[in-house]
Picture (cartoon, rainbow, N blue to C red):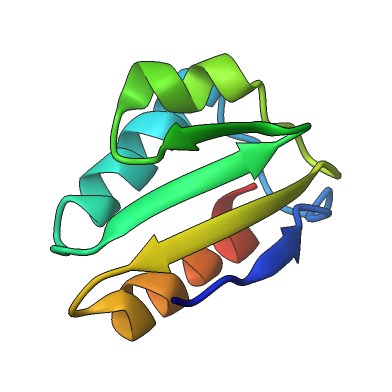
Length: 88
């Protein structure tokens, strides 16, 4: 199990609307066989589904927990972490 804990404080980067970054992240996650979940404020959801991601209401500066489990978890975790650092 890989669990990067991220602070999404990237206010210096361009801001994507929740619908766009959720679509982009879900697309990235579908490249992996691992299960990816994101937790915010005690609510944990599957990260590969756009509407679920949007329902978390993740904004710049929020603290989230990402859990990745599966065969390719290390690569998936690195990819998801890089995505958040670059886009949110």
